[in-house]
Every structure is written in structure tokens, then in C-alpha cells.
Image 1 (cartoon, rainbow, N blue to C red):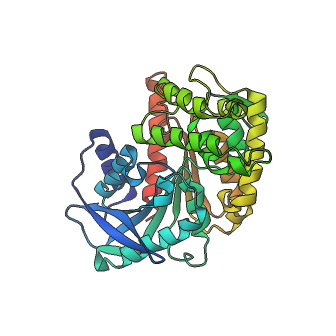
Image 2 (cartoon, rainbow, N blue to C red):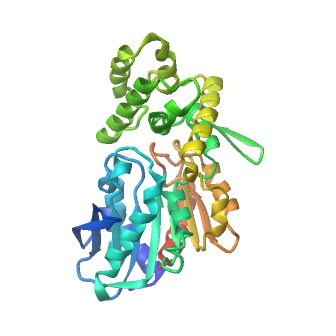
Length: 367
């Protein structure tokens, strides 16, 4: 099955070249009586039994078919592992629905166990991307999953919902007194507004605004284009024109034209109101104290210049985990939710590549 170093080498080669000698097949899983699709990718000529991963996609329209997701799971399988990606249809519809995380993972585990000696049942890890990252951490502590996972890997997760939303409106975040400012990807605040705006006091009747934000987020996901792209300005204008005049200023707070950013102070206030609304309606969207029950080992990887979830959130996640559970936390400029982070020179590139390879090798050693 190969050492972690050999798996990492095969993964990197596949990621760079786009080539992978793998077999992909579609399955149908039973998620507590609901049939949901899944993709299973294995080496074309597997050595039995294979270590395996269950991978959770994020809140995105392409779901398991996201281009980067497909490339990731093929590269993992090229490294000599089985990779199963259960669809969470609700997440593809941009509904966070955290209650469905554990049933989705359990359905994936049952499917892997049903493959007989193809998969080593005691060597299965869980990977979560973006929204799926804190969900993966939380679900690993569920009683039905204790002892069934070899470890958890989280890419691009968060700990504090309010801080994350403040960043998504204003671009501001801080870590241990150091303040940072970065233009945020508006996709996150569109998702939050689409799902929770009508739970904010005074916005109970703002369903048309929430619906407009949902359409923008769906359009960005369907197009595979960064949400701040000017190509969405026409859609914003069209949606705004359908709104009652009293709601247009609110819509502008979430979705101003691409050449403007939201008013920082008003945006941060809306972020706090939205966070409070989410905590009332869906408290499990925020990891919080439940992380103390995560068994580990946990590997966290986050983009240093991530524009959707700030890097300070992975540092908070790492601090909140039990010391015995956290295996490694890595900040890198070679991963991000949206915009490419261009490196300034070969020395910085070499340094980042070495750190990222160490993080990948640690991940490969989980199973």
C-alpha cells in the first residue's frame, strides 16, 4: 500500500499532471432511508486491502463534481487508496443542514464495509472541505463513529462563526492582537444571508432579499467563477430592481457592485446579527466546546491568504482541539477557497512547497 512518502509523491505527481490510473464508479447509498449518490474512486489495479477515505464536499452547487474535488480524489486514489465521496444533496442546494453530516458519513462507511476485502475497514479516514471541515471534526466525535475512523483531515475550516462572518463582510480579522485586512469573497455572506437573513430581527419579511442572494450564490457555483467577478453585476442589478425600495439598501450590504465593498461598520453589525440567528437556529454550525470530544488524530490545512475563511480561524480551531487530538496544523499559500495566491519568488515557493508536502505526508499517514 506504500509509505506516506510514496503516497505523497504519487499524489503530487497526479495533481500536477492531471493523470491518474484509477477507476471511478457511481454508487447509491442509503442515508437513513434516503437514496443518495456517491462516487467511489480506486486504483485501477488495487492491492487488497486498500486504506480508504470518506470525503465531505462543501456547500457548493457542483458538490462532488467540483473540478478541484475531482482532481483531489483522483490524486488520492492514485496514491493507492480508495476514496468515497457521498453526495449531500442539501449542500448542493446551498442548505447547510448540519443534521445530515453524520448520516452521510455513516452511509459512506457502510458502503466501504460492503466492498469486502477491497477496503481495510480499520484504516478509514474522514476528510472535510470548507463547511465540511468543522462538520467532519464534530461528527468524528459522534458515538456511532467512535473507533471507526483512523483520523480526520480538515481543509479550510472555521471555529468562530461571528468572526468568520465579520471577515466575509469587512475583510477584517485578527490573531493575538495582530490585525489583518484582505478583500473577502462575497460567496460566504451570500450563503449566510440566503439561509438565515429572515431570522434576523427586523428582517423577517426580507425573503425576497434572501432569495436573491441564493440566486447569486447558485449562479457563482454553476459558473465556477469567483463571486466577486464583475460578470455578476448585471444579475445583481436585475435582482435589485425586483425588490421593494425598503429592501434595496439591505441587498446592497450583501451584494454591492463588484467595484465596491460593503460598508465595514454596517457589514460587521449584520455579521453579528446573522451569527446570533444561526446560533439560535443551527447551533451545530459552530464547533464550539464539542471539539473537546474529538478523538483525533486531526490534521488541519488552511490557506494563508484565503478570502472566504480567514487563516486565523484554523489557528483557533487548532487551539480549541484537545492537545492529544491535534496532529498537525498547516498554513500554506498553496491552498485557498477562491483566488490564486501568487508566490513572490523561488525561495518562497520552495519554502511553501516543503511545508505543504510535510502536511500532505502527515495526512497520508493517517490511514
